[in-house]
Length: 268
Length: 217
Image (tube, rainbow over all chains, first blue to last red; front, side):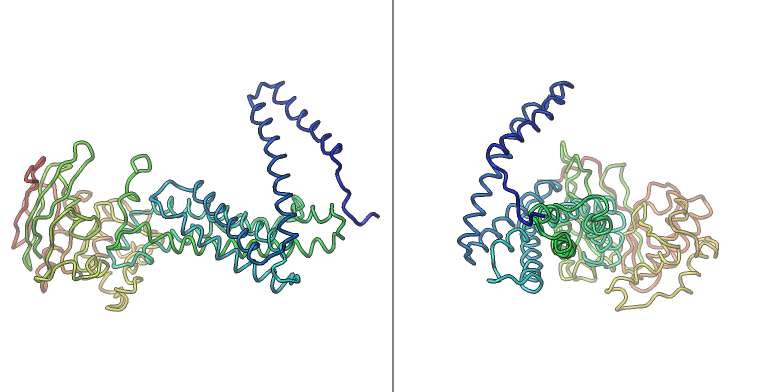
């Protein structure tokens, strides 16, 4: 058994174009109108990944604490932007909250994993920290986008209950508690479901990558366990922070519901 | 409770501005009248501080409403919607619901016995206590919600067509209970009602909201 990664040469990489021709053949045969997107997507895949390869190689080589922190923060900014953009179109200000949520969960959970569990030398080793942060961010981003969307839809469908509670002297938190709980539940459910089926339905990408790179599957599995639990923790924390901060935006300074929550979606 | 020059706009195009002033004295019942869409519900929501108004002030015992925190104000000047909010659970659980907020819990505790006798006064059977609140009819729901509001013991009760879904007998029972309640110490009712016919209140006055009122500057 050859315990190292088998390199792909330029020629071998060029052969992968045949794979695109298969997808393109299907698209052309059925006139799906996807050829342009497929071609552009292929070009982008090549360019983006080649670029990322060089950038990562540079960052790994430099392995400087500040550079690593800067890259992780940049990743947090992009993740926050993406999470908010796919979410409901509501009064602005969510970007900052989303950034707070993803940054807090990434830095805290990421530090726990790299500092305590994997413990590389130095502790900020880019080869460990950046991929770990990326996995945390990708999942937290999806989780908070779901949670934010659910928070607004729950609030809109529960206006009667929320206002009923307000007339009982409820604070915004007391009135919105059920909607907040449902929102966090919605954000955490996908990662919890993935804990149930991991390894049965599909092999996670990280583990597959390690196995392709020649790692003993028994060792790759250990990494994957850490990653799965880390993702669950980060998604929970991200959703909690974001929903815990943004439910206040449903209410005005007097503690009553904002008009946009009471209006139908198309008006608002 | 007095409200001075409360102004608000209604509708989108063209927005119509409404300006009202009024008062309700202790022991009094003020009936708000006006055509559909005149802004009666909005007025009650403003008085309860569920909706913000453009201008105007409300005084309770001479104290400006801004001197009360919103949650406290909403328990003192308590709004009951025409379609009341009922929560998951039994009628009994719904009646205890207001006592789940910290504000109410810190002041009084739920008295199931008092709630049961109020249910009886509005002609609801004792067995309704264990019924799922979401299976109530409209007329039952409004009476359960009214009992729930009364157990909160507000100073001013803002009622939005509380008798619209009731038959004659139930309507009479509800009005009788309200008349009895408002006679208590320092209480008042502001009532939106479309129904013609006599109302059994001692100190009754009405307040008309004109459709298309143009007192606005």
